[in-house]
Amino acid sequence: MSSKPLHIRSRPRKLGDIVGNTHIIKCLEQMLQRKNRPRVYLLHGHYGCGKTSIAKIIASSVGCKRDSIIEINAGNEKGIETAREIIRMIKHSPLIGARRFIILEEAHALTSGFQQAMLTTLEDAPKNVYFALCTTDPQKIIKTIRSRCLDLEVKPLSKKEMEILLNKVIKAEGLSVEFTTINAITANADGIPRNALLLLEKVIGLKDIKAIDEILSVDNEMEHQVIDLCRVIMFSKDWNKSRGIMKSILETHIGNLEQVRLAILGYVSSVALGDNKPNSKAILVYECFKDPFYGNDAKAKFIFACLYVLKS
Image (cartoon, rainbow, N blue to C red; front, side, top):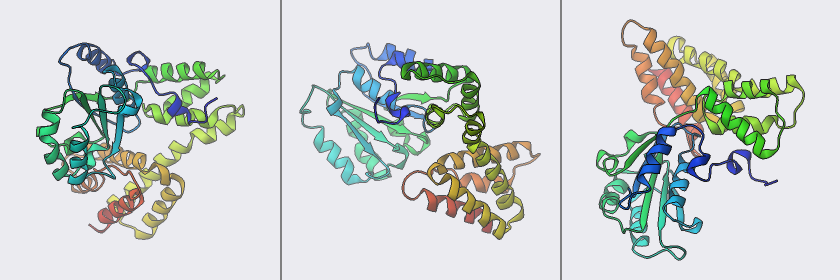
């Protein structure tokens, strides 16, 4: 068995492997058959829903070899100089294959300078070059670039679709997993394939129902911590209590602060929609937690956002 994590080795390799998002499958099946098919794609949606996997499937479908697919993390390489390097690179044919496919991960982090520098290239790139911009926040991409893209929203899976995905992976891996465990994973994954497969990998081989429940209860623990944190920073401004909850979240969910951010926004949305008039504190929380918590500074972003709401 491959040493790669389950969510990596279970990635779909072709359109027919994708579970859910049938609107994208149908659109791409039609578009990719055209002689004048789109060459710039905007893939947006929740983290862990398969944006990069779909980008790689598009690359394969247009005839790009694996070595001709270039992934650039915009969170690390995002300035004008990076844009210039890309422009210089695509002037030359790839060493392997006839086409080149450039995937810009976390495209919401691209600077305005980068985006302005790439405008003409995205509109009039060499015919053997394709681009995919992957992002959780498409509004950070300037309109003039968005208008040049085929817009594809990657949505979370429904309960039924998640069960189909899990059963498909379980069969492919030759595993034996109880139906109750599949239900528990589905309930805790929030429709996110990556979440579901990470949870599945944690419980593979476990027979102890109590141990499985403890592993799958981590997300429930996060939910309670988030609710407690939101109540304190929004309504009581108790620094000692806030500090304790923040420390607890950082100790247990330091590698998953993006999910914490989304949970906070989900809670605040419920509060805001339940009020009879606009909630000014909810607006502040939206503003402070609107940007994704990715990268090496995720911890700093989380702490700063909490502190800013607390002191306001």
